[in-house]
Amino acid sequence: MKNGSIVVVILALTIMLSCPVYASDKVKIGFILKTMQEKRYQKDRSVFLAKAKALGAIPLFDSCYNSEMEQVTRFENMLANGVKVIVLQPVNTGTAAILVTMAHQRGVRVVGYDSLPMNSPLDVMVMQDSWAVGKLQSEALVKWFKARKAGKVEGKVALIMGQPGDSNVFFMSEGAVEVLRANKGLDLVIQETHKNWDPARAQKTTEDVLAKFGAQVDAFICNNDGLATGVIAALKERGLDHVDRVFVAGADADLVNIRYIVKGRQAVDVWKMIDPLAEKAAEVAVKLARNPGKKITEIIKPDKMVNNGTMEVPTIVTPVKLVTRNNINETLIKGGLYTTNQIYGSQPIPEKP
Image (cartoon, rainbow, N blue to C red; front, side):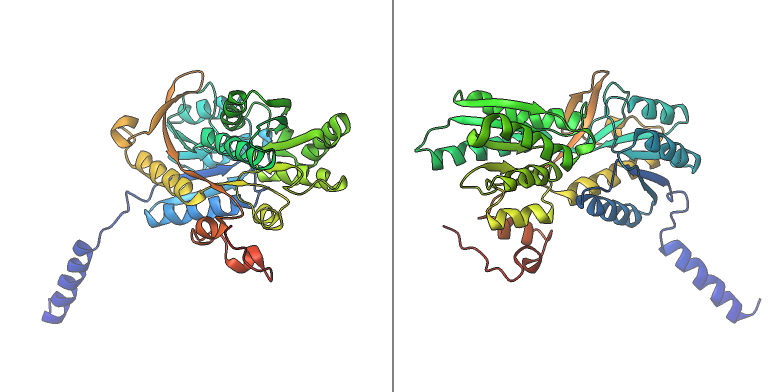
């Protein structure tokens, strides 16, 4: 072999040895969202995929139009594509056990995402602090009453809930109701679920409540921003869509709802920060995929154990933040979710009181 050829071979071997090669680490992981209906899910998708790729994995993505049957089909497709782990946001948390069992039969682990699959042998859960969402909303409501009713916390409240049977709906609503019950002057006049988190259904519910109680309903606590937009649409028809008249709380920090807060049409929102949620889910999925023979507790350190009706599920919880008219700049803009122009446009930035 000529000297030049030897040099080339040595150089090639040096590069190969000095650069990590992850051929065996190029695991496939799946990510299935229940829908892309709310704008926040664009963020879930992009953050998860970017993190998974950065960790050297091959991520596959799909969503299901809030259809259980569609989710079964797409879940089966992912299994057929050879994923080692599926991160699942179930359309129906009550029936998702079928999917978890299906995956386990093929040796595939399942990470619950955002909404806890009930009555299933789930491997891990990664979720935002759903209990805190409702609690923050109701605590803001109490402050709203005190500021407008000479310190009294008295009035009628409507709880506008999402998908029937959804565990996330239960946790958020539980947090809200806990605070409401602690304030005896608050009357919870309705606690209604809404199939597919449908804003139109929420609007109809609000119209019915207003028809029954007139302008005597003081507040609407909504499990997400889509539902809040439906509530605000119904309030607008009666000229009640302003925080001086009615308190409305949403969750997810959708841009339209943050603009409602700026305009005084919605009181508060809860920013369920997507980056830590999606990134953590991707990290957990990749770790599980690369350690198929290890116990879950040897791979991750859970924040808490949450009972889903079948077992205590190792659960990682990511933070949420209350958003008000006075802290939009410190939360959403500094946090990089939106720009000043996206939120305020040509409107002047409000000063703190």
